[in-house]
Image (cartoon, one colour):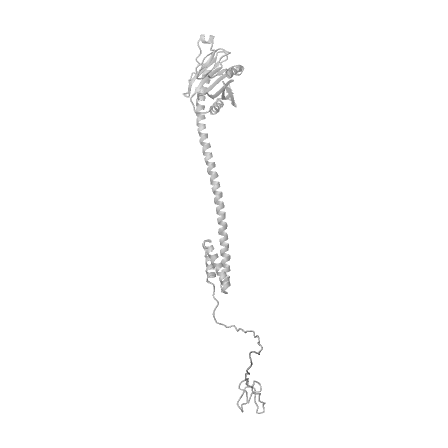
Length: 343
């Protein structure tokens, strides 16, 4: 008999359905038998086509999702770059980017490590770029600073050498001038000058000097040849001197064998005058006998005024012209200034 619930055919006399367990009784109506389907030959030409959407049933192959190797390697290299101070950061960045692209394309694992590798390596690469730019800028700044310091040192060294050379020359000239001045002062104090003879004293000189030293016409006063008691240094190769018997004024004409300029000699003379007690000796550029000369002058504590001129003649030799006089005999200075001639 057939089960009234599920239609399963059971053996006669069975009390329960073998399929669903429904109780069976002899008077249970039998289910209608399932009719077999007999296909009918249908002309395919006249048959109406039916579009049936295909049904895809996912098939579980059981294969595990793979992890992208480049993402893993890039992440590891990025971590190593931290320890290696970023030296391999660019490699980790490239591997992480390539791995991340491949993982997205192939639906692979490891994307998180790829992203982490990109972030870590990117930061390290940015730090390296900043350090490189700063290093180049700092190197350029250091180079400029070194160049400036080198130039400053060179200029300072040259200045110091020039200063030392001029100081040495000045000291040499000062010693010479100081010796001359000391000799003159000693001569004045001890009255050890060589006095002219009576005949010369009465007649007097009309001029002083020669072709090398230059000459001065003695238009006023009574003049006699004068000689320094202490002599002169070897730098003075020619000299002529005269002294006014009445006023005590002295005129000196010298030819110097030196390599110094007129400016340097004038500065040295003023320094010697300051050491001898002259207050604020003065210098100026003037004309003497048609030559451009450097003049310096000042008054000593005993009231004597000293005026010196320094210039180089046409023959290339240095000349020095001096006149010593009291303030009341200022006309003697004018006589030298206007009457000096160097042929």
